[in-house]
Image 1 (cartoon, one colour):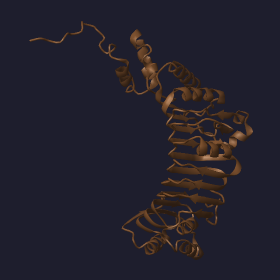
Image 2 (cartoon, helix red, strand yellow):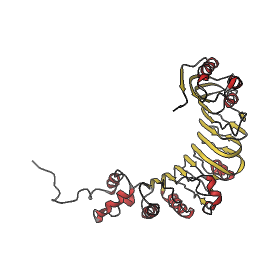
Image 3 (tube, one colour):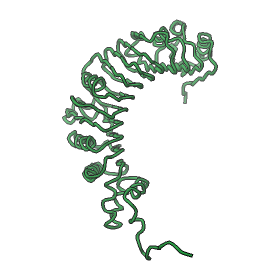
Image 4 (cartoon, helix red, strand yellow):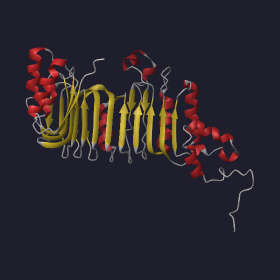
Length: 378
């Protein structure tokens, strides 16, 4: 009986494995620093970690200066490696901010190396505090990332303005999320309209325009849009393939053109639009897969004039106290779309629960499933 050839005693059979297999092992050790520490095992392991296809760095338990140096070193080490399918940097230590020049260097490396997901999360700082600080006067330049497929930038209001590239295209980009940043409205329009030909999902969360502006979002590829942008005077949406739409903090007027509008989420800010605003929709009478309205019931009254049937309707309603407030609620919800599932997030006093829900059921008789979320009273 023949046996396979055995390695001599003491042989390092793991180190003899191909780099691709070693990379798969190192991806499971939990962190880039831990993977880098394997370089002490032998000369063979010294540079294996720098070729990892995924580079994720978090500052858990690290001092501010130590973490910044580790990010610089890791990005320098991966310059000669194959393209990264994931590059992520996350900072939770808010004791000090990161200079814009340093973050810009990280993003430039990402623009060369990332052929997949890029995400950057910097410590959150109150936007108002930047008005009186010299550091807050810095702008952060975002380079063109032609091979990135997904970009998430959460910069924590740490810079005066996030400057988007003025030329070229994000040729492979399908998903973009920008959070806690100040942007010029014209830059935003230009990037979405002409520089992201494959963009499918756009999330703007906690974003503010550097000056009050009208914003026009036009895209032939976009399907999901979440728009939470302060200082927006009027929003024009020309997105023929739109399927999911979330809007919040819109000041005066919204115009929607949608050929395939399937899901619409309206997050209403009653302080900005006490009368429900002015919603103009060319999608009148369309069937929606899901419609969620958060905030004042006046918004529901505006939207229900345009949509007749909905698979799932979610209402976040506030019934003002007193008889006059309840009558206002009845008027604003006098017409509801026919829906199969009705989800009600109640934001009102206890005595109004039962009559409010019964009223909604009478206005939408096709409901097969009712879900009611009561306010937390702990």
